[in-house]
Image 1: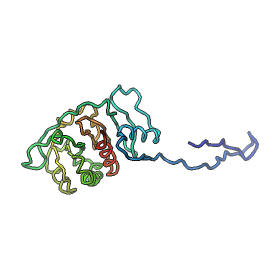
Image 2: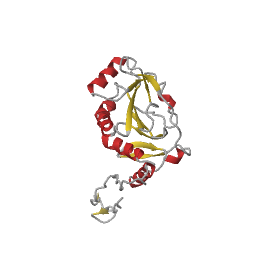
Image 3: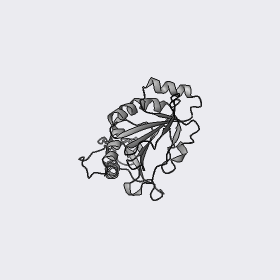
Image 4: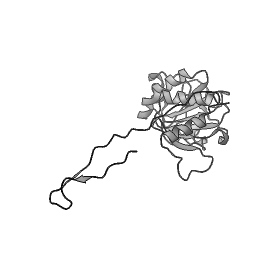
Length: 228
């Protein structure tokens, strides 16, 4: 942050009609995320900690130990659990939004990063991020499985129309009352949209609150997929 010089008066102090004229100062530049070299030894937790430091972010005060580090990544609220503090993710299982599609389960993809996106057809930011999720799911299909959880759509028809409109290719769980969503107590998806990340060992690893982007999704997925 640049120091702002004191305002100087054009006339003697106390003279009638004098005015304070602030001198122009350089514009402040916002934080940027600088990515380090990618390698097998680079872990997701380390990358995010670096990102938070560069962005001038600090963990939330009063946060209980083991609950993760909070900050912002690419302008989005982010919570991260370091690998050594992660716990097994609960398994959410519910009816497929697609008629006759059976059940959808977040525990059905061992060995992959599971990206759980919480959304609703009534949610404007969800419509904004839908193309980003579709693109990211295609880009990371070899290492990740995306799963949607549709909440507060008490009539499934608008939610099904949403999926058709954005050509969402990955499975969608219909959970209008949020009964499956509340299982994620360690990193509760309190906002809509929210995106939860489960690492390859089946542990809750991170959460983003708010609409996200293809770039952010693929970065987090690839970092998690690269963990040993």
